[in-house]
Image 1 (cartoon, rainbow, N blue to C red):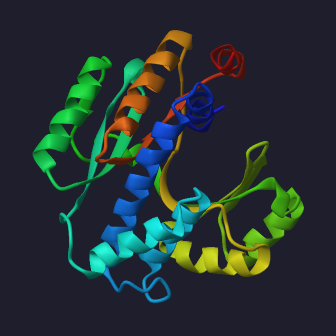
Image 2 (cartoon, one colour):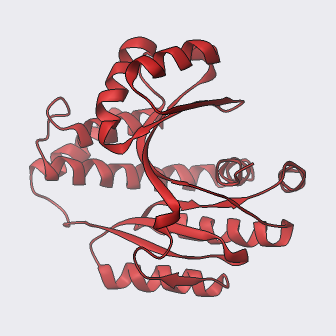
Amino acid sequence: MAGHSQFKNIMHRKGRQDSVRSKMFSKLAREITVAAKAGLPDPSMNASLRLAIQNAKAQSMPKDNIDRAIKKAAGSEGENYEQIRYEGYGPGGTAVIVEALTDNRNRTASNVRSTFTKAGGALGETGSVSFSFDHVGEITYKLAVGDADKVMEAAIEAGADDVTTDEDGHTILCGFEALNEVSKALETALGEAETVKIVWKPQNTVPVDEEKAVSVMKLIDVLEDDDDVQAVYSNFEVSDEIMAKLSA
């Protein structure tokens, strides 16, 4: 099984929930502000802002926080953030993509490079690993929304490309250009999604042993803990047996 989603569950179960939530709210607020600055501060007229708000609500971010983030953009307050993608290799020959929003490119690049080096990996050039990932739209729903057949039917009608259902919920994939259209159609059929975002999905995964799995997980955890980093994607794969040991 691909390791990233299970890894996040493990890390959250092991504690730090309060600090993780606070940092997550800050990053979600940054996404909202950037989206609002890039277009209109009205989510009905700004698809990126609509998605950012939807994801913030899915993480139980208070409405006051969301409103402040929008007003910050409308009032031209705060820093101007730049979207940057970093690519590199982690332990065990795994590929890693890091997406950041930063007001200081040099600081962020230095931090990301240092994190890769300390983990025994290496930061590469843009394009060095992204060719082995697909840039797609991802929409998730909780299991309570309906069974797999119901979600599959709704996804086909909405124009999605793929659907998977497991114990964590339903995951629907589509072309990233079609994300707004597909998510709106699914919202009509199934209600509001848990998350709607653009992700990097590995075309193939790289199996790693327990030692390498722990090293990759630590690399991702440190990267995600950086204030400038919005998301991290990797192609490492961990067997159910190893995942069970790590979860214990």
